[in-house]
Length: 105
Image (cartoon, rainbow, N blue to C red; front, side, top):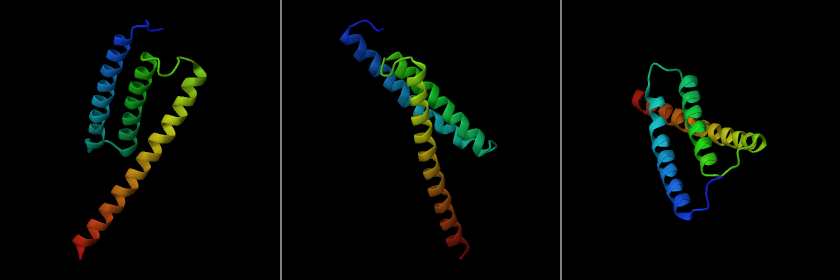
């Protein structure tokens, strides 16, 4: 357990939130690597975010380090990640299709 020092908890919370934001912004590079398959890009993106979020949440004691809690966290994270990614993928695909149709007219 982290010592009961409010200033330390606030400090570590702020630092790890910045780490999360930095990683969240940085992992978009996986989608820019043109010679990678969508599957490879998706799995690298997912893995990097999952590890970063899990470690930060456990480090800050936002979730306990217990198998059942990590299992629930993993399921929720995976469902949320893949749902958002799927929606984004479909939007980009449909927008690209519309643009290509307008360009070919």
